[in-house]
Image (cartoon, protein in one colour):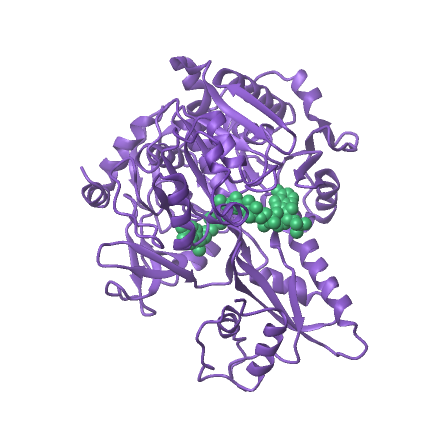
Length: 630
Ligand code: COA
Ligand code: AMP
């Protein structure tokens, strides 16, 4: 059957479609109903079923004879080490770590925050939680203590797992002081922390609260897998929304395991025993789904890469990893390829390695410009697949499903809706738009298995954020087009989310950080086009009183303030002082118009603008900052 037939079948009879897919998973108890329709979005997949995700990712492969196969390769150019774990070794370490959690009182349903760099202990921590039914919440290492504190207060973890440091090119990022500060800032206090000591930095431990990872592991009593309900939460992953309050996306166990296992063979075309590499970070959804869970759920080998596409040590690192570990398929963000292409435009490093085992490159996380896709295609000579999804969905919504049938590639489009997803394009009134017209991209409910089940302890916020706008549909937050061939074209966000180097960030949150400065009366942050990172945040501030303010010093303070509030990952470095911000007569700041000016796109002052003259000043300020860039 081709893509269209399978897609049609998945929508016509989702229950039989997903029941068949669920056979790839080992269940302790079969479900009572494949899909239980509740009040949206709280439809439940595989209700009544019992399983354990860690058992499916590790133990059952050992029992089936894969014990000696490599499960995880840690390739770390920043520490110049490579470490391999077989399925048996990984299971044993995860069982021991689950025992440590249990010894500290962590039980089914308790939350555990994982704030770790890209070391094997990070996926082990996630799997150890899954093993005992605890709910992990991984926080990306590039976030500040303040961001971590917000997540501590929202998830209220019993324990936090961390490390003495992460390693960024040219600097060691000490995690322990950040963790200590976050615990100090948070109202909720964890009972205990477990700290992995890395040789690059020492961590001072607080007695009776902080425990040393290796010491605890030595005395651990391994814990067995605890079967949990299919609908039991596996994890919470916080993502950026419109405000400074991150959204805690909740994923269940059953639907997640079924959808991810299905995606590995049908989208990525990976078989058990093959080597799959998602060059991302465990702190993002790509890391959750395609570094940790999906490859292990099907018995493949996964790669955990602690480095960057360039500079660790050079633009040939990706090709070295592909050759050395026999990678079949690579998944990364377009930014990584733009970074490589910038340093090695003629692909000279590529010629130095044997990439004959590579079958495909998948790109996601941000819009993929056709020139990057075409460059990658020319250099690698394999299909380059742009695919579109988001933290909320947990797995691809639109893709060229290589395991089903390769459809023609149209650069700039992530191809068609994946089986399971009924994607529509709506106008402002909720009417479906004809092919070729731009509108809000939505997914008709029910969402397939594996997508968010709610926001952590915030059902109403979930309804408000995703379901209220168009009843019966999930709002993706992206605007775009469907063409006559059913291909989707993702054009822009309809909210305040921007995408910086494949990292999803909230401009609203940056505005909150700027507004906290005593000199700032009001401010606006929007994303401007950047040839490397796709977008960069740019802030304009209006001062309470300009008198006596040293603007250069103020700019440095504002940049530091955003970095401290959100973290280095915000990449906030562009800020200028203006006398006023352009607004509509009702007081809404015209961020979209300012963005158009900065990006060098055609623009006209909106009819509702209060005072068009102000746009001249904005244009001048942007030109001074180098925008629009040539
Ligand atoms: N811990 C601490 N700091 C981190 C961090 C982490 N895990 N990850 C990033 N940072 C810091 C960086 O050191 C940098 O700090 P600086 O301002 O002091 O230089 C800042 O956050 C911005 O990081 P980044 O956006 O990654 O920029 P970069 O200049 O270091 O690297 C690329 C540029 C293109 C090489 C890099 O962004 C990249 O590899 N992108 C691929 C995208 C990706 O994997 N996305 C995941 C979704 S699929
Ligand atoms: P995240 O939740 O961090 O994965 O970010 C999801 C958002 O990134 C999406 O809603 C899109 O705005 C954007 N995005 C991800 N993949 C793509 C893609 N292939 N094309 C265009 N935008 C994308």
